[in-house]
Amino acid sequence: MNVKLTISEKLKDMRVERRLTLEELAKETGISRSTLGNYESNEYKDITHYSIIILAKYFGVSADYILGLTENRKEKNTPVEELHLDDDTIRLLKSGNINNRLLCEMVKHPDFQKFLADAEIYIDNIASMQINNLNAYVDAARQSIIEKYHPSENDPHMRLLEAAQISEDEYFKNRIHVDIDGIMADLKEAHISDTSSAQDINPLQEVKDSIKEAVDFEGSYQQKQIAFLCSQLGINYKSLTPEEFKVLMKAFSKSKKLKAPVRKRGRHNN
Image 1 (tube, rainbow, N blue to C red):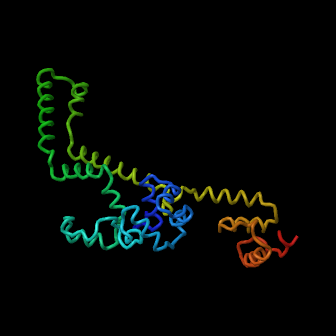
Image 2: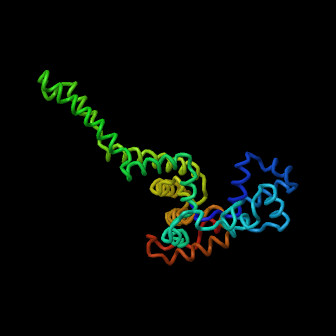
Image 3: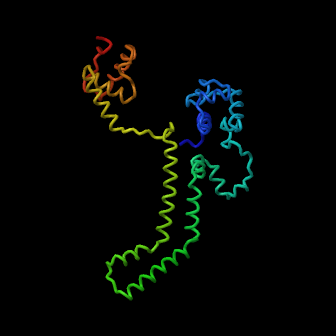
């Protein structure tokens, strides 16, 4: 996940949030569908002054937000004291050492307040007295049963009472763990299609496929080797022009890794 949203990401996010297609947005703004599509393309970097004004007004955000001069859509010049942040936190947020965008998404998650509530309960020992009272009640019941019935250590009822004892540390650490795991899973799912996210690629399988393609390739042994190297470099061997092929063969002929000199005759010289 990038630290900051690009212009393309911001425009697409705002459109998707309103559940609009490019065609629908084009009708709403008067900007053509193809132009809007270009604006949302990762490769497209230019956007007209006119379009910025139209889109900013339509989505109710500032032009500075679209241009990346601020990450705030509407909030402007909010006094620091209103955020109740201490100096160290402000310095950390401004340092660039953490991903503020990810932090913002975590804070906005519906379960983040529950996570903080559970953390506060645990850290401030808010539930300690209640948990101690419950454990004391269970222990008293257990002692009463032992004195009256003298059950064995493996008696199911006694084992149940032992299991009923609550460990505050284990209970709240587990709750906090569940809270944060859920938040992380949701954020991962939301960004699964991000261009900056790692792709689900198996490097070993890619090498195996490349070797198989090279073995099946019709040509000399040296040509098979070169076809394999081209595959690893992301070069389509079959699409090479005669001139490109000659240059490539000449370059690879200098390699000590090839088991035999590369002949001048080849696919384009037969």
